[in-house]
Length: 65
Length: 174
Image (tube, rainbow over all chains, first blue to last red; front, side, top):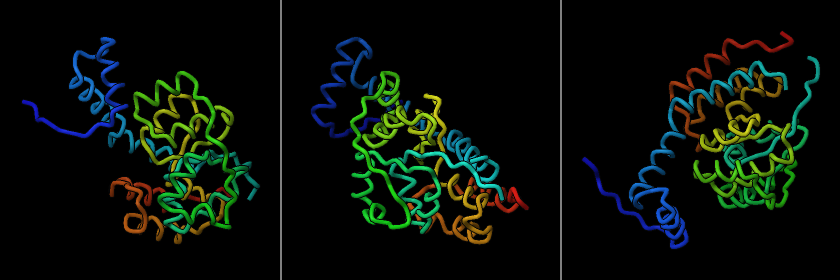
């Protein structure tokens, strides 16, 4: 089951989206947007945030510089 | 305590804004240089202009006209990096030994992918205890009030982990 989202997209961004679809990277604009959202969510995951905070703890408390 | 050799830092907007919200911008003043590309300065000017006029730190603003390497351009597209983040990472190309300061997960991921050292506001705050710029109790107070005093979002469980580590930490000279 899918849910429909609507968003206002600036003309230049839409041109870039269409260019990627026309070049064959995606079969449709919908597919590109879903892929982009998935990548965005992956890159903002809680697990990633946790690992970055732990790196800050290590450097902050036990680093050398 | 032996003096530490402080590296240069290249700043994204987030840590500058968050540290100022916590009255902690001075924690940056012992780094060898604080580089701020103009697109980042523009973002800071928009959201928290007083940062750029804070007398406790010397921010070295620099034009953000560095051409990003192709790998950076690819990462910027795939991670949807913003203009300031891209400018800061492009500036890192000229300062590869510097630490990139950002609180943005995607920008941090890109920096790590490019092999750069990268930390955020939490790291700078904790470092202040290690280098003797803040007491443990002062930092505990800052961290406990961080959710209401700053726009930095840290999950409660992670903040508790940070506090637990701080409470157990020893200074190098103690």
